[in-house]
Amino acid sequence: MPTFAPDILAAKVALVTGGGTGIGKEIARTFGRHGARLCIAARRQDVLEATKEEFEREGFECLAVPCDVRQPDQVERVLEETLARFGRLDILVNNAAGNFPAPMAGISYNGFKSIVDIDLLGTYNVSKAAFDAWLGEHGGNIVNISAPFEQMGAAYQAHVAAAKSGVNSLTRTCAVEWGPKGIRTNAVAPGAISDTEGLERFDAVDDASNLSAPLRRPGSKQEIADTVLFLVSDAASYVNGQVIYVDGGSGVDAMKLPPL
Ligand code: COA
Image 1 (cartoon, rainbow, N blue to C red):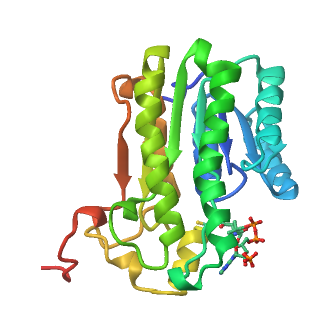
Image 2: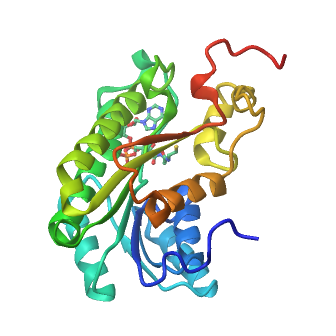
């Protein structure tokens, strides 16, 4: 039995960047199951089209627009197409991100820049475009997908941790500047999540990493999607500017000891 009523997003329109795969796809699907109409935007057109068809088979209305979030002209086109198709926008999830585990000295100049451009500038680009095109006048919800390790030294993740620190900062600034416009902005920081490209890449570095959470298991994509659904729902109507860790308690585990 679903946790949330099936119609809590009825008549809402949601844009999910990186919505063709992984956590973004699960977020979009969860929104669809709760009544939202969807726009998914990501770089790979073939993957996007396959996901759109899958969603349509599940009965959701879905628009798929190819977009590299680093390119403002492509981002603006996504907003134009969303508004042309659905006539409104209620929810933006900035989920598109890049990642590869590498020690800092092993990341090339361009590799570091690529991740900051996708994760941080991409979040800024889409948020600004959505604000200008619709949200600034009508209000709505923004959820940024962050990372729980950005507050600590994060080996193999110098580029991502730096970018996600910026994402958390943007989250708080948007909450303050855009709150008066009726926009709530929050972030979700997923820990190790099973069946994702991110975890596969990390398993190559440390196959025990997903067992170190106090809950002794990785999270699921559905658990991230449900947290995002809560944040964009009226149940979270006074939650603004927060970064919610969905990491099984890893972020508060100072000692990392085996089970007591
Ligand atoms: N290890 C080290 N460097 C890497 C790398 C890896 N696994 N993957 C990419 N890079 C470097 C490239 O070598 C390049 O730097 P260079 O020009 O100095 O050689 C730079 O990053 C940009 O890579 P490129 O693939 O040309 O650019 P891109 O901007 O299209 O894509 C990524 C960058 C990171 C997004 C790409 O690796 C990718 O598509 N990853 C899969 C998707 C993903 O990251 N999903 C998120 C999982 S959590």
